[in-house]
Length: 311
Image 1 (cartoon, helix red, strand yellow):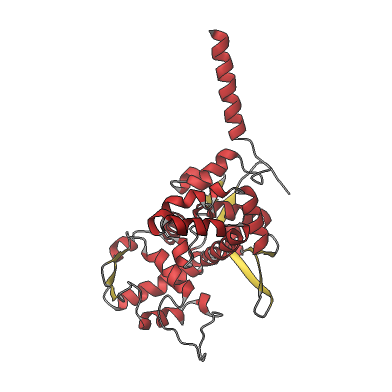
Image 2: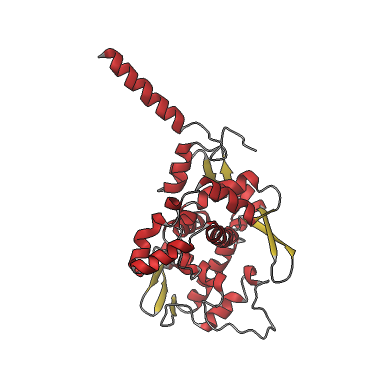
């Protein structure tokens, strides 16, 4: 009996060691760390291998696109007594869209600009504004949405620091917002959204120089190569909206190119919203080549600690 107990104990110790051993497959993360990145409940549970700098100067946080837009939106709400009327689709009215668009830095090089013949027709027409604003106002602790109104809870808002609000928006982006709706895309691909913290790790590891977004997409797809991580995992979602024939057609369209394109669009837009990347256009024209590297803000704010270096 004693021998059996020792054997079981030895086996369990071996399993724990495997779970905590850095893996080349995960570019230096252990299976346990990878699991925590994909399933985190709060950011404290990710310490010590992922930490966010609580002591970063507030002015650096406020320069990020998401907190820049938050500041401008809160200003509009305060000027209107803490309440805004919304459209039938629960979007901002054009007056407020224009106020935000022309006051936020992220839109300086947007396809709509001052003097352009193009006109902003709705909030959804300014896709980045639409997505960032939705992430911010999804925080029900600070904002309340009625049928046709957006209400600002100023007393609750001022109780939280910029740091706390910033982290709350990361949490909302990963766990609460439907990214496929943001991109009006039939493919849900929740693995991209749940894997956002792992994408931050890839940026930490490889983002010292400008690289094409396709580089990161390839790395991500190599870690999640199976259909069960992508289309099959999302079947309950598809079954809510499509019949069997439509699901079968969609399943046949699911491939690496679709996954890579969705990964690039969704992940790097969110990286930009939170100020984690610097972007550069290397080739102009209809097929613009975008390259990215980790921003100075990312280096000041995001800290990964791993024991193994994989090149």
